[in-house]
Structure formats: structure tokens, C-alpha cells
Length: 434
Image (cartoon, rainbow, N blue to C red):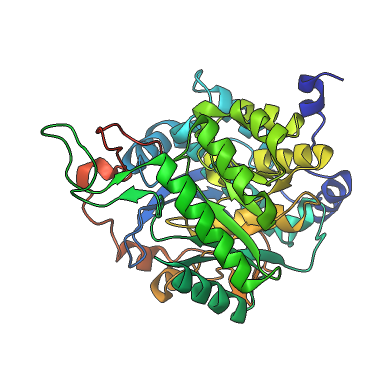
């Protein structure tokens, strides 16, 4: 069987769920999409959240989806409003797969951080509608639960070993078995302080990133954290694509004795061929794909068994439909999912990931993300994390709603520098890949 035939074989909706849905909706009038709207909100924080609300011909039946893209937010809003919504009007919302495929191809140029987020908003909203109409949570339509709840990893950080150890111990006391350990911000442990090192004339005088310093400092810190805490915590670490070539290989080799749960994005997506070299040298588990937007970035890594966890964000790859396919592919090749749902992400996207996670045998771990009280009021029915486990509301559809009046009270704050992601630089002034 070739790769193309294999990928075609991953049906998203199990036959039993389709039969249940048909029985539940038999005799009802055919559905159509009557209207849709884009809803943006800061949710009382510094978020730039984007939601799509799709209204149907059935009174009171609608769905919401996330188009979360913090760094190209305005482009996503315009793509939804001017391009996707006119395409959707009059369509049958039951035909999720057909709408996803035609929505994917209608732009001619496929994939990418804007197109995929637009698709995601549509796809999540359609699954929300289908679940509500069926009277069951989306995970039931995806085959039902295969676990009782979704375990999450917590975030811990410290600027020295003692602070990092204390942070991990706090996470463990709160019920987390999996903890990601960072040393300050991304790249922490690899920075040369301001004014130090030989620098070009007229160049940067601030702190700068150095790969070799990172490999040595962070590996030694993680060794000490493991020595102090023993084997109980399942430790993770995110390199955030800051290493290249043999430095990435050497870093992973240094971490092998520590039995890490995973090391995340040790390489940038432009350097993925190096994962084969890492596999030949050591067994440190690799989590990869936070900034992937095209399936053929992660497909060869999965089918070649070169990585252990897929770290895509559900909104960034096009929604629940492709995420469920991806989980099925992972299951075939012994790879697990670890969807990237932290940081500036929103509760709708978190719940979309939850429904895939709880119904997928290939699930590995979910990233923790808590939301302030104002955000939970804007989106009633948010998931809850208790003692390291994520729980959904159990309501039909995605299980949460949106208070449009309250969302409108929290407009986006002014966007500085076009909303760009913060970048580090090396001692000679070159940009470091995030």
C-alpha cells in the first residue's frame, strides 16, 4: 500500500456514529447554512481570539469554531468574512468532509497559516452543529471515549536549578505527572548577557543566543533536575527550534540518560531531515510540529518512525477533521499526539483538541492551558483542568458557547509592530528561528 492510498483510508466518522446520527435526525427538515459571523475578542486579556459562528436553518441551532492565529489575526478575519462566509451560505452543514475538502481546494493554493485557520473555524463549527443536533458530545461521533479524561503536562521554569526543581515540585503537588521544564524564557540557558562576547562594530549590545552555550548549560541543568527529583516526574523540554544540525543531535544525545518524556522541536521545520541522524545516535523521544502547517511536513516523520509525538495545533492544521486523520496515521506507526494548545490559544480550540484526544488511541499528552475568569465568562462551558487532567463539560457538540455581548466588551488591544512574534539574534546579528 502506498502512502496516498493509506491516507485515503482514514475515515473520520465511524459507521456506528453515522447510523446513530441518522436515526436521531430522521424526519427532520434538511439543514442549510443561513448565515455566519466573525467574532473577535481579547476576552479581558491580551488575546487576539477569532471565532466563527455558523447559523443554520433550524431555529436556535448554531456552531462555533476557532480560527486562532495571533500573528496574522487581521488576515484571518478578512479571509473568513470576505471569502469563506459567502462560500458557506446555502450549504448543508451535515456534509463536513465535503465542505472541508471543497473549502481546502477553493483557494487553489492550499494549506498555510491563514487558510488552515479559516478551515479550522468552519470545521469546528460544523462538528459543533452536528453534535448538538445529535444530542451528544463530538467525541461520541468520533467513536466514543477511549480514556476517562485527558492528561496534561504543566509548565515549570526557573533561572537556576533550585528554582526549576521547586517549580516542578509545585506542579507535582498540583497533580501533574508530566511537567515541561524551561530555564526562563525560550532559549533560556543559551543567552550571552548584554555587553559580553566579541561583537561586530555597531551591532547588538543586548543579550544574544549561542547554540553551544545552550547545549552545554541546559543539558547540565536538566541532569541536575533529574538527579534531585528522581524518576517520578515525566520531564519535557521545548527547544523551540533554536538548534541546528549536529548541535541538535548532541543535545539529544546528552539527554538520553535522563529518560525525558520528550524534547520538543529541537530543530526548525526547514531542518527536519536531521531527525534521521538523531534517531541513529540516541533514543531521546522527539516531539515535533508546533509550526507545521502542511501535512507533508509531518507525514514522512511519522511513517518513517523518526519522531515520537506530533505537536501540531488543531487550528493550525485545519480543525478536527484533519486532526482525527492525523491521530489515525499516528496510531498505525506507533507515534502519539501531543497537540500544541498552550500560550495564546483559546478554549474553543482546546475543546476541539480534547474531543480528538479522548477518542484517539494514539493520544499521548495534552498541553495545559488555563484561562482567566473573564475568558471563562465569555465562553461558558470551558474545559476544566483538575489534578493534571482536562475535562469537558459533557454537553452536546464541543460543549461550550459564546456570550457575544460580553465578547464585544473586550475588543482587541492595539497591535504593535504588526503583531510579530518576538525573535532572538546571534552574536553576529543573525535571526534565530523560533
